[in-house]
Length: 143
Image (cartoon, rainbow, N blue to C red; front, side, top):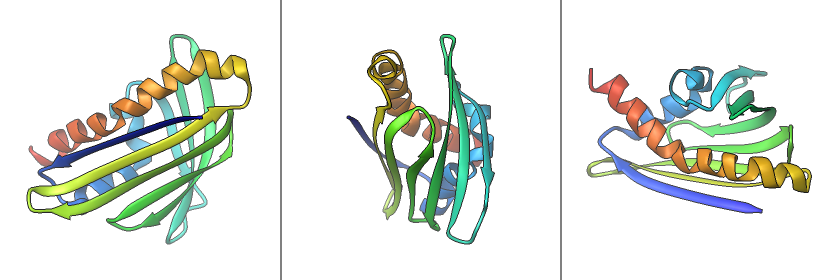
């Protein structure tokens, strides 16, 4: 199972960063490998998300349940898709400079062929996630 963690500090509030990550319908606007993203079954502290990623002709869709603690944390667990396992979490912590963002993800695909073909692609995409949100925050909040 692959595990990736990434952390950074940004000059924006935890609330601002939480809003960007929680607004997953907009992911295709700024995350190049996400071609479709939408929410469903939205409740006060959770929602389901469906995302489709595409990279070099490989296209897969997966559904997760996202549990939210507003402005603090989003915890993501697999519902269906090409994964055997997918667990992820975003944490937003106030710091003097703005916010500390911690992102972690663990995943494995259902079969060895998918692991060999999609594993490196999905891993690289996961490694770039925090930077994508940092850049998006700069574009949105520094206008």
